[in-house]
Image (cartoon, rainbow, N blue to C red):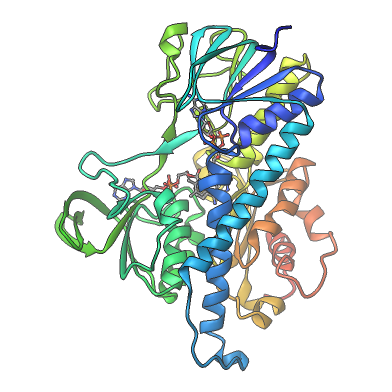
Length: 465
Ligand code: FAD
Ligand code: NAI
């Protein structure tokens, strides 16, 4: 095979693309990545999951220190150095970038830097920012080009006053006030970051509850907890207009038929993300996208036999771990093995404090599907560890099939919920029941005991409530 010809060419090096490349190489396939950005790792590593979690951690430390009086903390003059905070975030991202580069090199994966576009079904044109375009041939091509932020017709981000998450993870100082449009994952996480540092944060959310798609009880509880932290929420509020002035932005919204105006130094536009296929040249090979801009696939295969698509650019939750699972599955499929990812067991986490984590069906979804289900709940107010940690805002919930007792869904709002939810995913993966979870020994005192108690509550026999 010539040096520009590969078994697999992957366009995009996010968690979908680079993980797919590594698995392809492990399976003995010659593999190349085409990436337009200077660094590998995609949205997640460079401007998404990782930098946001670094900021969430640092600002939570600040918040704890600022509220440590009851614990005997005496801090005379607490201050935040935003440049240092950003420097640490940068170091975290850098370390992981180096890690991905090393893994890719170790597997002898060729990296072509430049924007990839289809020339034919086996050929990608790679156009570097500076330099001459090259062509790369692939027996198989995997589209892993991810997603980009959605904007509103009357509100285009300018990167300064009206920003997306990419700028909101890199502010040079704490904005005096921040209007967050959309109380979904991005808004809640980055709103928390800046609120903890003293910004006056106000959310405008179109839907009646925050954290769309979450269990309704939990999103109400979460809203209450975030309000206690000082953030303001206007739900059922549709943003309809925007005017940029020299030092502030004025946003018009509609709530219960009335027009309201809000103003702030900065506006974070976090109203969702859309698949990124612009400039890929899909039309050249006769591929089109669906009404949501996604590339339609059947078991990751597009309408063209040797072309596959994974991650945010196809159906399913727009999450890094889902993209990774897609990437592995496609590598296996190309190598002639079985490829399947069950999206019904993909956990979802919002990394606020407390964290909001869930997997499987909500009560609402179970009810919409006509499933006869049971629910068990356990409030963190009755959990010893939560009390010891001052973290009683939260609840654990288990939903089971009433006939089989199998767990069909779970949600937990708690400190550390992102780690705790993994045990429920494992129970569900093995077809576990509430009885199985209730009979599983949990260490004491832990917040995870609340899930065991919720499982006991399904049968009306929780011990501590
Ligand atoms: P991406 O990571 O978007 O990667 C696509 C890559 O393709 C990019 O590097 C891009 O430059 C490249 N590319 C695009 N077009 C071309 C082209 N024509 N030629 C060459 N290269 C191209 N998910 C979680 O699971 N947990 C989180 O905590 C989390 N936090 C997030 C926080 C923020 C602020 C954001 C914005 C997202 C977050 N996400 C999180 C979502 C997560 O980042 C995405 O679901 C994930 O990155 C999708 O992976 P992907 O491989 O499909 O695409
Ligand atoms: P989102 O889809 O989670 O939330 C967008 C919110 O904006 C919705 O609640 C929607 O009702 C609201 N909205 C839309 N138009 C509006 C309007 N005109 N006025 C007021 N509200 C409006 O999208 P978000 O937060 O931008 O995140 C995009 C994706 O990135 C997420 O869906 C998720 O897949 C991923 N992500 C995941 C994270 C995680 O796993 N922790 C963290 C950050 C992002």
